[in-house]
Image 1 (cartoon, helix red, strand yellow):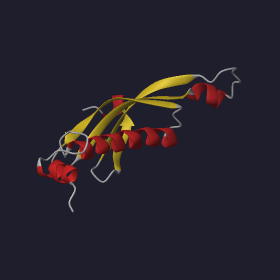
Image 2: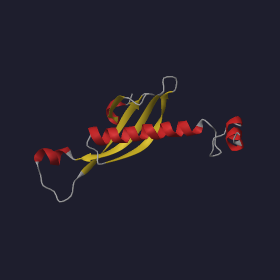
Image 3: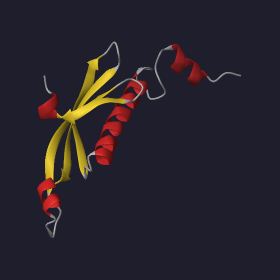
Image 4: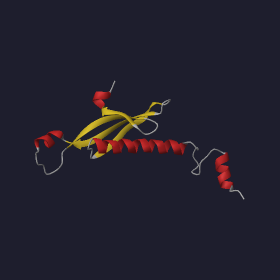
Length: 116
């Protein structure tokens, strides 16, 4: 016997949460892109904290995302001089990242250097 709830949710194009059927995958992709950007900056730029401030599709046809994020990274002057401090000093850097539809980082850099 078929399940009427399942049939109606499929036939009317709505998911089980009452939203549009395509909304969940879109939200899931947005979250995956955001997480990838945060993890990339933490792992490759030694960021202690990352805050995504802007993201969107830069090229919808190719599925390329552009993300702008503030990364709080250790102060390089203090590190290079080997100064001992009681609390870690962090600098805020703004990065721009580009991520393709297969969740590959295809470009990143300091926002001030990559802006057109």
